[in-house]
Every structure is written in C-alpha cells, then in structure tokens.
Length: 395
Image (cartoon, rainbow, N blue to C red):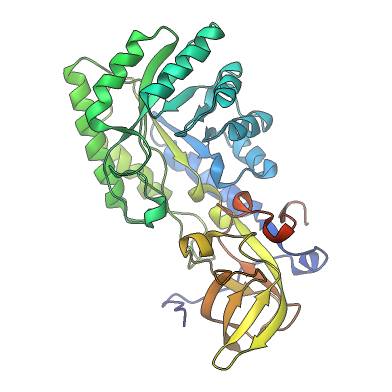
C-alpha cells in the first residue's frame, strides 16, 4: 500500500463543476500556482545581481504556459529547433533564447541563426564546425558555449542522470581546452561560456554543491591559461515534492539559488545562468481523468481510467510517482490499482493506493503533471491528444 507519510493529506482545490462539462482526459493548469512559483524565482534569483534564469521548454511547451513564463521575464532554454520556434512564437526575446542538444540538425541551426539567438550550447567539435560553416554562409557570428560533462552523479533516476562520464551528453573535461582552442581558430563562432547539467528531479542540495566544486576546478584550469568565460550555465535539475503538492506547491528555490551563491566562485563580470523546467511548471499541472470502470479482482480492485500512458507516460517510463486524488468522492477510503485502458501491462499509474471509494464517472486528478506530461503525450492506439486548460479559462 502506498504510504502517505506523516504529513496530513489534503485535496487540491479544483473547479469540479467546470470539469464535469469537459471531455476527459485533459490537463488542467492552476495559474495561481504557476505565478506564485515565478514570483518566487524572481524574488530569490533577484537577490543576486548576476543570476539569469531560463525556462527549459522541454518540460511544457503549451503556448498559454509559455506566454506567462515569458511575461515573468525568464529566458528560454531549448533542446530542439521546434522549441526554438515555439519560444520565438511565444514572444521570448531572441537574445534570451539558448539552444542546447546533442544532435542539432542543419535546418534547426539555420533557423536559430536567422533569429539571432543568444547562444548555442555545443556538445562536440563536429557540431561546432557545422555551426561555424552555416554561420559563415549567412555572414554571421554565432555565440557558443561548450557543454562540459563534469562527471558528477546525481541522486535521481538513472534515466534522467546526465552528468556522468558514460552519458551521451557533453564534452569530456579532458577535452575542454582543446575545443575552446578550436573555437578560437574559427571565424564565425565566438566562445562565450561553459554549460553544465547533471540531471533532473534532484532534491539533494549536496549534488549541486558537488557541481559547484567541479566548476570551480575547471575555471581555475582555464584561468591558468588566461581564458575567462563570460557566462557559466549550470543547467537546472531542481526537483519538486510529488507526494505533497498541496503542502509544497513551490520547490525550495531559496536554498537552491543560495547554494550556488555560496559555493560557486564567479569571476568579475561573469553571469550565472540557470535552466529550470520541472521546478517551474510541475506543481501547477494535473491530468484530469474519469473512472470508466471499477473492477474487482480476486485479491485487489482496479480503478480503470479513461487516461492511459499515452496521456502521462512518466509512471510507465520512469516508474514515476504521481499523487492521485478522487475529486468527486468523500466516502471512506479503499485500496485500488489505478490503471489505464491501453493494451499494455505497463499502463499502470499507481498500485495499492488508498483513495476515497471510487465509482464509474468519478473524476480523478493525477497531480504534479505540469512537467513532462502534456508535452510527452502521444497518439498511441490512435488516441486523441489530451487538451490543456488553464484555471483562468475555467472561471
């Protein structure tokens, strides 16, 4: 049975009457939570003059979400040409758009060059040379930062750890000076900084301390060769509390930024960049689904939803936990396996969880689904993609 820990559990507040009028499954975004999170980011990062925050678009590219984040003044961190386009269309200033990713295509690079984005985060010498070639054809100079693999582990799921030596991402520390020298030889790229990212859903602040220590070491190496970076980008990775979204709707941003202020040694004139994704949008989003059937087995019972893993793949892909609430029942709790309708054994959201007694037609909320929920949805089994609605639309 899933433990609810010692913290008293409370249900989230949802416009149930509005939900009853909408075809399920769909995503619901509480814009008050999103704005509270953005206000906290501005407040906490704003304590430090040289901190710049970008939003990692891969977490959620719903245009209504992007617009609010852009209005809050964040930049955009992109990992595909499509995300660069979505950021441009959402109104992010070109000089606040960063393009990372291990496999940028010529088409994506050309689009980004045409829009004069702030920086390409480069992951190999071949990529650097292609960017230089394409920039030369346009008579432009592309700003580049090098993603250095710091070989720093993170206490998170193996599939979302990105900073180890054996990961596909980044350039090895041993090759750092070589790639910088190669960039300085090329006429149509300008080296402006270093980029790091060690993983996602990190709650151990010591993981970020370890990254700071490694960045300090690498900067000392460069200083001995009189190489100074204008920009240091430490990625994102800050996690959220999936078990208690009602008690902790905003992650610990104060401690997160304070760790970097205390432990990372910046040189005069340097700017420190962050790429927060999950921490910005996870807690504002929920997947809303109806119970189609309650099925009693020999030793357990199932709440079968009209949502499946094509709508929210994280539990099947990462064995990720999402708190589930029965929004339309206050009856005594019973134990259920909450599953979807897909003809796959992995189509399970949560096993042996205590919920208010379920009936056909009840509305369930799968919480903390604002990040990597709607954006990862697919049309598997020829299903329609879930729509996304904001609290401001459903007043």
